[in-house]
Length: 276
Image (tube, rainbow, N blue to C red):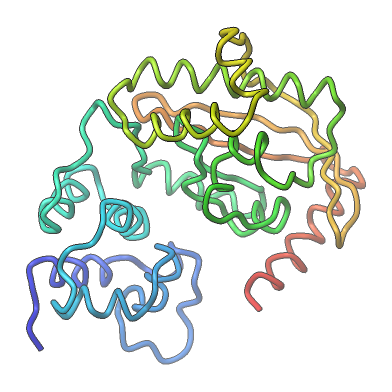
């Protein structure tokens, strides 16, 4: 079977990622020294068949979105990520593009928070990564709903219990944050398309955009109505990664509280359901 430099690099880097580091069991009979193809496919959100065709040289032109997802799944450094883009025949995203790269150091920090719901967003509030407990708590998003701004203005809603006041404050903060992001990355086409679609499809978003809404994300206590463990009132903090323009959203419970007990229960039954 013919191979390419791209395929060889993917196979080599896949072998260098330990299953445990990526959240998989290392037990059983493993032919691969690192990640299996199906594990890489799961982490990158693409099909096993496509990973196989890339590695065997039968597919040689992945999209920029696929390359970015593979770079995150393989935990590539900034240099290796740029090389992967070049092997795919693509220009690595430049400073005019909203950053979407999760560095190995940030990934290692997330690995230590397995008992805490954590998600990583880019500066447009598009979810890049969520650990199993975050997904069990908040639900799994797909397509446009991966963007929190889109979801709050045009989606079907979330499990967070809102009041009209809290919903209005969140939406104003999201519009203000997105406007600041648009000012930093005026040439980013995906961002331009997102704003255009939101302004066209949501009169409320368009009004806030025109009014130059003022607000910012701050610490909040949120009540999440979970279908299996009931209501959880948790502290929500958003951390910004300097130099990468990423947002890390973390939910925590007060130690010894009923919310902490329910979160611990969710860590068992919720992640089991996702695995199943």
